[in-house]
Length: 102
Image (cartoon, rainbow, N blue to C red; front, side, top):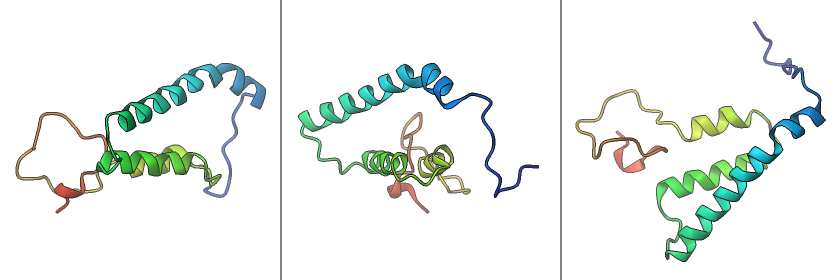
């Protein structure tokens, strides 16, 4: 069991991590920027609950507090445990919909 106060060790050096993953993540950041630009050009004001969650996730990426993947996964996950009466669509929203909260 890993102690919560113990920071897990990565077997790669910082340079190895950057060399291995920088270009992949650069592309993801550019894709996200293009998506937000496209939304803005479409007249979207960012009031959709999914965009609000995405903006919160972006803030977590830069807050320097660590454990980002876990915190963002929790932010974008439905915390409810009770099933809803009927699904409004086939598929998922990708972020908790406050209109469907019990």
